[in-house]
Structure formats: C-alpha cells, structure tokens
Length: 468
Ligand code: GLV
Ligand code: MN
Ligand code: MN
Image 1 (cartoon, helix red, strand yellow):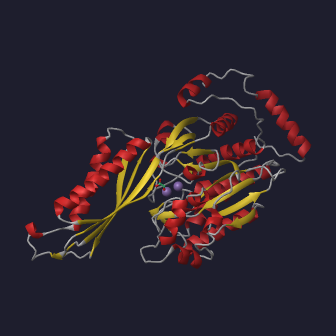
Image 2: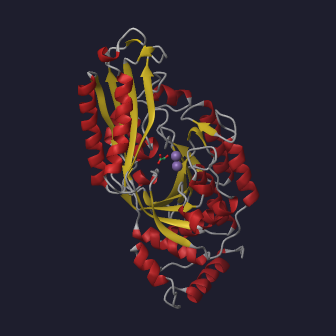
Image 3: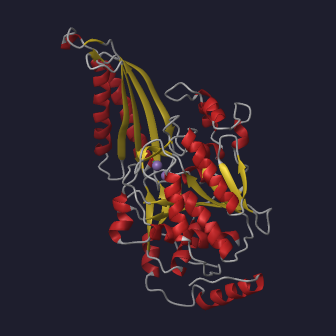
C-alpha cells in the first residue's frame, strides 16, 4: 500500500499508529525462534515502521539500461574501467541523478562521489549507502550498479513518502571497487577507511600502459597527488552506519525462492602477483632438456593454486588464476618471462592465510625445479573478513517483515566496498537474487521486481537508522 504524508504531523501520527499496532512483542511469530537459531542474531526492534511510496519500476529499469550504454564492449556485456571516457560519462550520469534527487553532491580527490540529504540533526553521524559502477571486462550491468541506482531510488521513495531524516542520509559511489586497472580492489573505500599501505601503494601504481594512477585520475578531471591523497581518509564517526545493496552473485536466493539475503559476514580476500624469468629462446632449436620455460612455471603454479585450495577440504576455500601474461608472446618463442595473478578467498582467515603460504612455497619450489628465477612474489592485499553489525541486521529483519518478504541469513563470498566501510562504521548488506547466480559475465541479470524489493528494504532500513 502506498501512502503519502501531506504534512509532518500526519506522518508522525501514522508512525505512532503503525508502531503501536505491530510493535515486536505484541504478537507471536512462529518463524522467529528458527530464525534466531539459524542466524545467531536475536530479533527485536525498538523502531517504528511505516509504509512506503512505490518504487518507480519503469524509470529505474530505464536507468539500468541507459547506464549500461557507457561501455567499452557491445551489449549485453558491460566493460567500464576506472577513469576511462565511459567511466567519466557514467559518473556524470549518476551525479545528474543525485542532483535530480535533491542531494548535495561532493567528490573527493580519488573520485568517490557523495550525495547527501541533510537530516534535521546534521551534527549526528550520517547513515550512508552505496556501491560501485565500474565493471570488469565483459561483465554485466547489475554488479555494483544495483547498489548505486537502487540507493538513489530508495532516497526518492523516502522523499515521495514524505519522510524527513534526522541523521543525514548519504549515497556513495565508490571509486574502483574492481581491481581491473591498477590491480587494487576497493580502491576508493579502502582509502576512505584509512589504509596507509594503500596511500603508499597508489603512489607507485601504474596500469598496463604505464599510466600512473595520478595521471589517469587527472585525465578524468580529478586533482590528486601525493600531497592531497590523505584528505580522502574519513574522519572517525563520519557515519553512524553503512548499508550496501547488491546482487547475490551466487545461486542460493533464486534456487530457494527467497527474496532477500541479509548478509552476516564478508569472506576474506587476498590477491598475489608472481613473476618468473627464464632464458627464452627458439621454439624449434632449443631442445627440451635445455629449457628454462617461464610459461610452464606459471602453468604449474596455476595448478598448484587449485591443489592447495582443494587440500583444505572446505567448500569455503576458493582460488582463481585470472591472469597469465607470457613474454614475448609469440608462438615460436619459449616464454622468457611470465606474470601470473592469483585471487584466493575464504570465510576462515587463518585457512586463507595457510593457502597463501602454500602458494608462496610452491612458487619457490617450482622456480628451483625449473631453473627459472622467482623475480617477484607480491601479496597485493590480504584482507581480514568483516562482520555485519547486529543493530543493522536487526533493522533489516524489521524491514523485511514489514514488507512481508522472505529472507535468509547468508555470507558474502564476493568482496564489496562494505568490507572496508566496516572498518569505520557499523556495516550491513542486503542481497537480492540474480539469474542462476551469474556475475562477472554478460549473462548477469536481476529482475526489476527483485531490485525493487531490495530498494524497499534499503529505504525502510535507512529510515529506521536515520531516526536512531
Ligand atoms: C568483486 O568484484 C569480487 O571480485 O568479489
Ligand atoms: Mn564485481
Ligand atoms: Mn560488486
């Protein structure tokens, strides 16, 4: 049911009415105990609940379609790499939507974009939500975008409902959640959260064309240098809470016919760069016993990654080799150099660290056995997992109940900007189903109805938290 509130008095009267009618404790919910046992979180709420104006499905769908046009590869794939022309155009598109939603827009030195709806008590820490719009090569149009366009629509829904926030509400577009261009994942949120290692890392970062991060940012209109990099870091207490809406990127919600996933924790990611150097030579003339093939060392290491991950015996351990580059890259030349990039994750940090250690040992052993040099073994990031906040989880449970949506507690195996926002703010995530769990490929799809469910949950939760 859609309700509009012509004035504040009516609005608060309605608040009181609904709250007093369905306040937790005033009825016995048969699923409550099971949920508590399953999630490990007690269910309670001290917040009033209200009805929302409907999501504008047509205009939201149009925004997904329009944003997907800013791509370096043809539809249905989307490729939108940090600070390229299409990234800049897409950023402009979002800033325009922020303006239309009546938000005041600011950008920091690395291009994180913030759209703020100032609350009635602007001195209080704000409630923020957001995600990313960069897209890895040949991916889809929903990863990250659901959490940006969906957040803006949640703000619009609240405005149409006549809601007035007490704490300011803010939508954040994070710079470069994907590591595609500079090899650094969640660059914007990592820096916001105050990663000193990253401040140094960025200074040395170049892309595969040898363009520095600073020059790339400049070409996109951002003035960033060693001097002002630390201005990006958030002040303590900037946010009261942070929420991210995202497609599940896994099959569970769709398979089980569940509308909403409430995330309890995000798995721990690590990424590693390795380089081997051999002698190279002529593919016909150099006999097999004489070779020091850097390409085969990389191939062997890729298989070792798979072996070490499987050895843990846990379904929660994963490892991927997504990049192998051979030099000089000619069919009739033995590779003299190889470059390999490894991604490994686990919900258990210690077990993930064990895998990283074994990969290191294998790199040393393979180099020795094949007579090549291990010229680089660099752990680019080895991040701890993040736990979602109990209070936010409770607020999300209240919202899904109010909306009569089915939900389940789940972990996120993918990483998100939330992993880093959790370092500076209580954090929560909302998952919605996506087709067959597909993500990071063109077939990625979420229905507008499922997205709208997520937007409603987000809107109600933002509202609840803003009144805290
Ligand atoms: C995010 O894109 C991830 O790789 O988990
Ligand atoms: Mn992604
Ligand atoms: Mn994402």
